[in-house]
Amino acid sequence: MRVLLIGPARARDTIRSLLLDSSIDIAGEFATSDEARQSGIAADALLSPLAPEPVPRRAGREPVEEPLTARELQVLSLLAEGLPNKAIAARLGISPAALGRRLRDESD
Image (cartoon, rainbow, N blue to C red; front, side, top):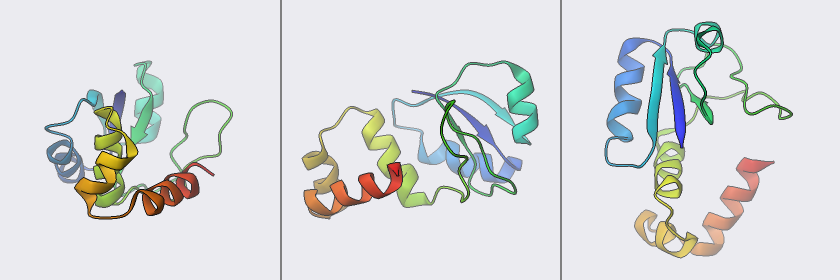
């Protein structure tokens, strides 16, 4: 998965450290979502921990209205590694059913 990091340098440092051992490829870093859009760099997602404005997802989806939490970034990282839900749930210390509900809630 290729992502663009958006936000202040310190916030991008935090995200970068959370994604360090994941298979998520950081394709670029920008201070604002406008800069990211204008860059033309292809990415699957925009990640911003302190989004001052909605950050658009893929075409046809509603904008993200809240920044991702550290836990959501952790889940995203594990998903990007290709782990099955049971393995992700075990690493997070939650039940597979709880993880499934969380993923469904986040995708709505």
